Image (tube, rainbow, N blue to C red; front, side):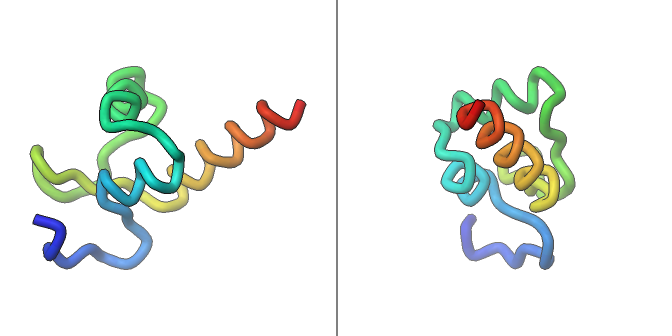
Length: 66
């Protein structure tokens, strides 16, 4: 279902995993813990807001640099 048209400013689950360098299970944990929320798509193929993903990536980078 990757051929689904994604609105600008949103990432698929696979794109989110690549951006954060995590596995599908780690992505599910982020959602389960409330650190990342679905912004659209379907139950099986969710989208995530790019700004939320960028915030998580920045937080991880700051933590690893410290």
